[in-house]
Image 1 (cartoon, rainbow over the protein chains, first blue to last red):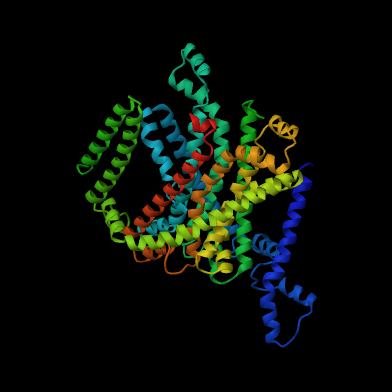
Image 2 (cartoon, each protein chain N blue to C red):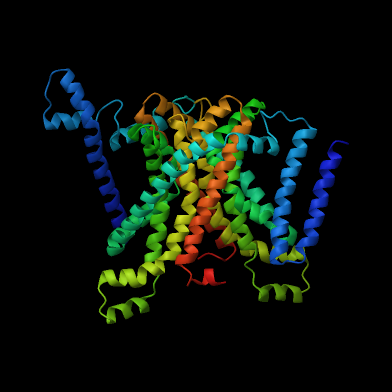
Length: 287
Length: 278
């Protein structure tokens, strides 16, 4: 309750500013149209027209909401105009990439924690790999894969995986190293094997870090997939929807796709948060 | 099978050398291990491309990329100026200043802080790159629209960090300022801004790569006939993959330099912080 009121106030303020901006930005076009038709607009008419244009510079919130509603529930989900269909395609590539990236990140982290040679050779390059703006070259990756005959889900998933592996790697390395000397000594005094130390001490201790990383990673994977869809010839996925909207000046379509992506990202992070709560509760680590 | 033998030998040899070196664990050997690992990957890459005759349309060899980099210096420089200096850097500076100002404004009102922070955190996790087509439509094809995309992308991560930073002083210190009758601005400048610096620089460092990405991705939605994003997409169209990789290399170098520069300034500014004294 303490946060609900401020958040709602801020949201309302944003929507208000948005409406004002929509009127201001769309007014030029409405005035031009009126001048061409030789009519003068009253202020009320002007406002009404700016909020109902087909291709506004800035669509009003209710237009975006309507576009989103149309896209989500307005047609069968198998239709190519359905945002559910496009979202599903984006989601499947995101999940595949997220799975690959998470697995790679965890495996690398386990290797790094257990082998000093790997720590010293892989870790600096893993950090350096993040200076390659993969999102910027995502289209190239897609085109190169396509020229090698690989299309569809896999190329997008690889970009998503590349983006999601790093947060997982960093989080897991930190997490696997959290057990302090005292705990490790205790394991040694119980004559635990390396495998036992890993499964009974290091892995459980790393889970809170893992989940924090997963939330970052899943959002990153979604961004990667969407950008990966940009050059796909504008056929399928939320990214393709953005691109075709930008080609044909369909601003409402762009905004609807954008909000669909935002909702998807929020849902994914929420699902991870839910799993986190359940797992940590089960382990007695819930906060 | 036989063709794979030299690749395996090089790999195992380098790995053996690294495992042996890693045992010394000094500053020098650590650097050496990392360098050897990097060099091994490059050598293996070159060997694989040569031995299996991989067409350069799919994967050019490092030597080809290097040659293309040297050959196209002039093009790479114009692209660097257009995308990094004009688009990314301008946008990053504007976005950072706006975020810091907003954070100070938010800090004065607990109501706003409670209202804006959850929304800021939420927005920071969204695929903001998606607004690129809209902003390109609004601000035109030149670097201004790229800077606008970068402003929006870097704003929220820096804002969230800065607000957390302004809250980082403990009540005891703030009370002390109050007992000295320090006015709000004085305690902000002398106590809370310095305390916020580690947080601020955390946000600034995170957003260096974001700025690069925003500027390059925005160019896919329309750009003048220069810029890294433009060059990447047209070079891919002509299947000039060595040039594409040279652009990638340039972007990676620019990104590392940008990050390194911010980290260097951080070191100068927050020399007192425990993480810098270690």
